[in-house]
Length: 364
Image (spheres, rainbow, N blue to C red):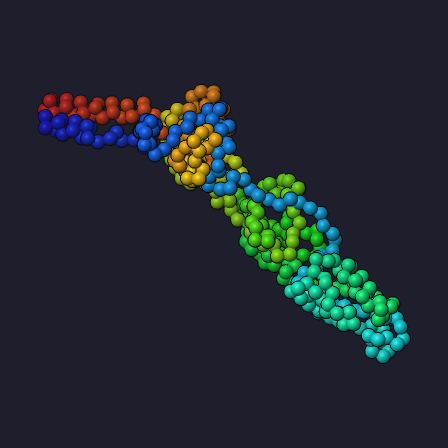
């Protein structure tokens, strides 16, 4: 008999063994005046409202540059090397040595101020201009001294007129811009393409101290995103590191990385392997999300508390459609709670074991 009493005491003192919490346990105290979290039922109406709440876990969308057209010539930049050959058909040339018809001025460096010093002319503003424009300006400036001068000009692109591809390609390094029609896709192709071992590649461009991002899939599929490169650009190709967490009665309990720009609650459940049929409560799908204090509102235009629990009921058509529209944010936690029937079955099994133990003791 002592064994029976001990066994029943253990049953009374210990919680029912199971793999996940019940929805009632997680939401206990939600109506308390000082509750630390807010509960929002995901319905057709609330999905639209929550979609306009401040984003969490990331800015809410990828910012990318608008496309534009360019010329076939490079724009000269500070640090470029310019070589000039000035031709003078006159017999008594002022710039060429006796018996010569031309003078070569190799490897003239464009100054940090964007100017080029040319003998008999002085400083010529060249930065941001095409080689053809600079050649014509030098010829015009030489006209008072050398009326028939003709200028031959070549440019060797410097560091400030090149793009650095830093990571995520076959051959990282600096790539000179040979013309203004060099696009980001042609640049990635020159660098050997995106590394095949990257999961969900994200292309990041840093230009003039601003950062732009786009998923490689969007870049490849939409020609309008294939922007022109600019001297000084830096390109990184990295894995999309946005993730959400799956817990409870799901097929997988782990970090799940986003495989597209947006993931709905229904898609997220599919990514985690769905619900465990023998354990999950389809009425108790919970999504836990944290907001910043500055995101709080006193009406439905935003959260009222920094901790919000969204509840989804997959046993109705309305709940299923709402789950298809509700967007998961990076760093959300999806908790599939345990069915109350599982807990009840566990309790019945424990009592069955206890009664079996009692019968065994009595028979002895």
